[in-house]
Image (cartoon, rainbow, N blue to C red; front, side, top):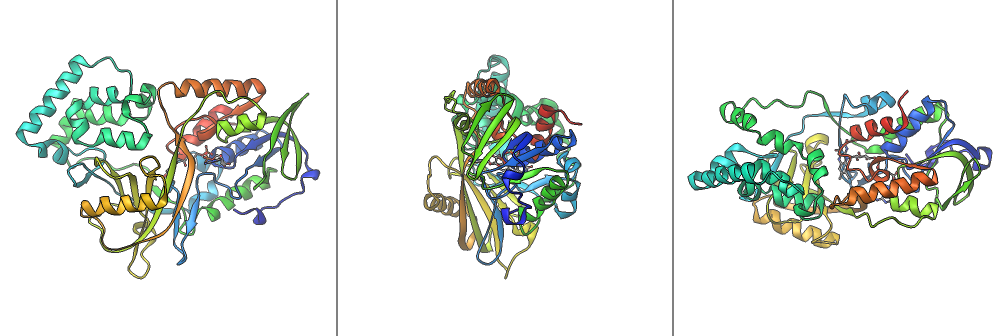
Length: 441
Ligand SMILES: Cc1cc2nc3c(=O)[nH]c(=O)nc-3n(C[C@H](O)[C@H](O)[C@H](O)COP(=O)(O)OP(=O)(O)OC[C@H]3O[C@@H](n4cnc5c(N)ncnc54)[C@H](O)[C@@H]3O)c2cc1C
C-alpha cells in the first residue's frame, strides 16, 4: 500500500504511543495486530514506502507482476487469524516442484529414488550403499551442516544428488561452515527422507507420496499491495497508525521510554519492537555493532519466454553443480500467459555473480547447456534485495543472540526474520514467532 492511500495523521497530533513497531513486514503487521488486541496504542514505522517488507513486487511494461521471492501461502496459516480478509484475495493454486540434478535431468524435489539412486547403476548403487553405511557407522559426531547431511545420505549421494552444491548455493557458504543447529532445525527433511523406513516405502510404493493437506495460495495477480491494503485497513480501524517512508533517524532513551526521530518529527513511546535488520537497529540506538552478521543479497531476474521450456513443473530448484541461480518460478502457470508468452522469475544468490548482467548471462548459459528454455527468452526486469536472509555461518546465531541481548539491555525488543536474525522460511513461521514473543491474546 502506498503512503498516499493510507490515512496519514500529522505526527504532532499523536506523539505519544504505548508501542512503536519498526518495520511493516509480516512480523511488524502481526506485532501491531497483537498489540492492538492487547489495547496498546501503536505506531508502525517503515523506511520503505510500502507495507509487506520483503513481500515486494515489480510490474513489467506490459503489466505482468513479479516478486522478489515470497509468493506461496496456505489457507491454514495463523496469519489469517490476524487478517482473515486476506483469504479471498489469494489465488488458489496447485504448484508442482522439481529440481535440475547434476546429471542434467529435471526430476523430483528434493530427492528421486529413480533418478538419483537407481539410475546410478550397479556400481553407483554399491558406492551409495557403502558410503551411507560408512557414515552411519563412523560419522556420528557432527559439527556442521555437511556432517549432518553426510550422516543421513552418505558422501557419495550428497555429491551425486547435488544437495551439497545446493546447500552452498542456498546458504551462501560451504556446508562445512553452516551451523549444525540450523541444519537440525531447517534440514530435518533430509533425515525424514533418508530414514531407512521412508526409503523402503518409496521403493515399495513409489506413487503414494501425499500432497500437502492444506490449500496452496498465491498472492493476487496484481501484486501484494491490494492484499496488504486490507490488513492495513483492519489495523487502522483498530487504532494502529502508520508512517511509511519515515526516514527513521535515531532512537533515544528517555525516562519512561524512547524518543524516535523521524524525517518529519519525533514520536514518544513506552516500548519499541524492532523487526528491521539488527545492524540498522544498532545504528538507530547508537550502539556499537556487536558483530558482522552476514546476510544474503538476492538478485531476482524477471523473464518472459516463448518456446519449449523443457519441464512441466512450476518451480524448479537448481541442484546442478553449475549455474548461480537457485530457484525459478513460472508465474504464468498460476496467473496465465500473455499473447502466448510465459512469465517466470529466477532467484540468484549474489556471490559468484554480483550484477544483474552477470546473473542473466550465467542463467542463459547454464539453462542452454541443460536443454532448457529453447526459444525466445527476454529479460523484462530485475530487482536486487539486500539482507534477504541470514547467513548461518558457525557462531552466527551466538553473535546474533549477543546483539539481540544488547538491544534488549537498551530496551528494544528485536524480533522477526531480520530483527531475530532468524531464518523464517514462511510467513506462517514469522507469525507464530511474533505471537510467541509478544504473547498472543
Ligand atoms: C526469497 C524468499 C522467498 C520466500 N518465499 C516465501 C513464500 O513463498 N511463502 C512464505 O510464506 N514465506 C516466504 N518467505 C519468507 C517470508 O517472506 C518471511 O517469513 C517474512 O517476509 C518475514 O517478515 P519480516 O517482517 O520478519 O521481515 P521482512 O519482510 O524482511 O521485513 C522487515 C522490515 O525490515 C526492513 N527491511 C526488510 N528488508 C530490508 C533490507 N533488505 N534492508 C533494510 N531494511 C529491510 C523493512 O523495513 C521491512 O519492513 C520467503 C522469503 C524470502 C527471502
